[in-house]
Length: 374
Ligand SMILES: Cc1ncc(COP(=O)(O)O)c(C=O)c1O
Image (cartoon, rainbow, N blue to C red; front, side, top):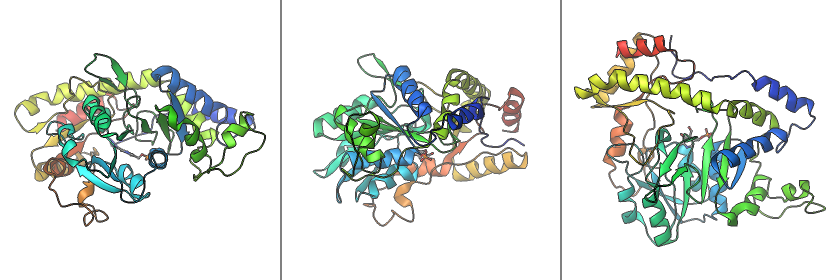
């Protein structure tokens, strides 16, 4: 049996959890949370990182930080996870869904400008499969219309964008803020988990407060105030240090994990190229400006029927492939709130995309089994 996903343990997770427990402080912002923050700040140059209990939480924090008010409009792809949009809907935003690119499920950057109105407050690009959106185009629009950009980098750890200045920047470091996920399906995981990256210094102080139930407790812990109290809205967005301990064990193995996933990805790509050349389905496209963090291997089939056949065929060989997002503009919750525009590329990915098994322990024989079955 080849499952779709299998969480990979590097070996140190439980040692670090024990260490956190024996250190006597297992609530949030303990030793392992600080180590994880430093890891990200040093390795990727993120200005400020705050671990959260999920990417969903990080997105909710971002929505509070940019002060989303009822009626504000937020532009994002419809082909995304529900949290991308729910986080803003919770603050009263109207979501303006944008279609996907023809060559890639990410937002079609060239269709964004036509959606901007006086009420638009933010753009939320989603780096689908860890592949960068064309951030220069998006940041240019943000500058022109004075908008915030929140990168949904749930799948985008250790992935990069090269802009027109030729500089290669890690995803998550480009928008005003970014949200990462460490859910067990991600390259680096802690079961549930996430992180808010803040690149705009204006949000540093308030982000700490919102994450700590609307209090200035973080300042108190650093000895900057002699008591802490309720100063803003907020919630409990910080994870216990046991979660951070698990995460840190994974982070220490980032390179090994990424190398293995890339091997699997390349083996799929090479093995399936002859079938794609015959037009049976399309392989993922990595634009010149993007790197591949091997988060996901997906095929875009020619029809819903083809996609269903592939899933059923693989399943009959005990290989579990899955489809992905159901477009949000047609969801039971949002369909009657959507402005009615057709989003044909989004619909196509909803119908035709299939994700193949992808996890560290998928060995070459298993990859071969998938390829032969296909
Ligand atoms: C694009 C995107 N955004 C947000 C999330 C939510 O992440 P989490 O499960 O960590 O809240 C996901 C989950 O997979 C996702 O794919």
